[in-house]
Image (cartoon, helix red, strand yellow):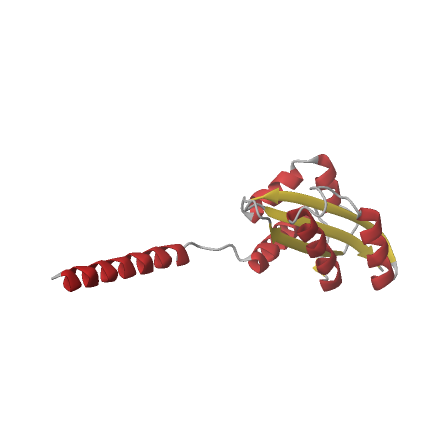
Length: 158
């Protein structure tokens, strides 16, 4: 009788743990690659609505943006544009013939459309989105606090 009771408890606990794991596993995760594509889509929708050319995604710029987002997310630097001049100097050396640059940062759990809307509601960020640029890179990293840290770099290259 005692063995049957112990067996029932073990089965119950096993099923309970598996159920908890299954429920947790079904929680949707944010696909960061998809989120980057959405940011680019909404930025370019705004640009084309203003008669501006869409921005092309550049992997070298995206890597620099990703590194900056990671540094903010891991608290290597505060949420800021710290190191902007150095980032742009490195990108200028790597890409050659770069004639203009700017950067937007954000941290938020909101959908991509709302992140871009926040930027468009800020005069400085909007100016960057509407600037005379043709290339961009986007980096998004999740911080320990659960927030997503965004960096979008804009460059004009001939």
